[in-house]
Image (tube, rainbow, N blue to C red; front, side, top):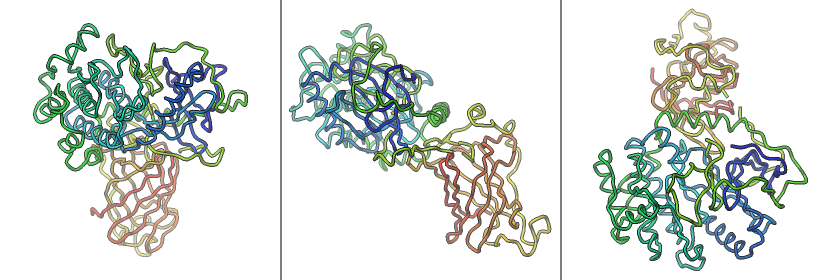
Length: 546
């Protein structure tokens, strides 16, 4: 992400700008926050387009169409002002790299993530087509990989299938070579089946690291899409290969509909495949670093002369020859696209993020400030995490507590009759709490509750002011993250209030910040809550394990 240039606004509409994500032939994309603290992507068109009334009319139609798209696996339009002196639109901000960048950096995805990816995108397309819309530019750079699932973005060229809002002109194709359907290339009319063809090409790329159609020129590439069979490689096999092949059928009528694709990939829904963590460890580590960086960003200083929805200066040339507003993506290959009305500009930063929850502006000046406890395990900043390694040591205040040590066993509970400090008769901790409790925990990130791994809470006897146990945190695949110690503040028959802080155990990636932990009995289970905001106010419903 690039810092704001001199003369650029500090705010657009009600959104305070944090920096510039990218620029293209149609405008610029800014990272911003709403008055209520929501992080968004604000897309602003070039001022000269604002003078074109036909463009304004099309922009208004596109925004109206995009507002209708709000499925689970898309980034919604949150706000827009088509009538501003310089039109702008604010979309949800998804924290995750484009598929193209992820595969280029880390290689093809394993089969399980590919299935989750395909199911999520197919469910998104089902919702889009159900509204009478066609995306028309499904490609790796328009697919973001977030910890809580994939997102299909950039509906700037989606249009109503009734053809009342034409976005094309003579000699201009909408889409990207290698991912456009044959009928799209030949100009024979585009239906939802074209998106299914593009989906098949995207899944082939995700699974093999190669596009199913390649060529040494745009003309050769487009010819192959229309006349030749896809090259799927030897690593794509089984049912997934059969499904991709069906999606890439030349005849639109022979392709499955998105709902069928979703059902074949995830009979119980894409959410079930994503819930336990779906991305490989290196990608999770990358997302965690980017999430930490995002938390530290401050809005630009208010500049009354530049704020608001007025003209936006563009002192630097666009970095792409064509394209509409959209989140930044990977630099295009030599034949990544033909002239389009939907190409997306390349990035100005390795961080490509774009959000997926709606927001209403709140009281002014109430920007969100998150704070930490249990290791910002965000190897969890948004979903199930993989913290295998010490990458957080360089990111969190104070670093870690020492080298990773997996040999040390968890603390053992103290029997009620124990005579060690805090034990014995007269304990302030009721006996119902004593023992070991285990279960998954969740955290709140940008207003969304997401899975974060698992807790093991050991409770022993003690009185106010004494240690009563520990909380061990593991990531989604069982790697040790952090151990907190608990010092009792107060106790009732059904609730304990304790102060939590890093135990100093070797390998800890806790920040060392102190926070309040509340343990409450709920039937035969234990409810864990924490006020550590930077860790997402983690909470858990734990079962007795011993």
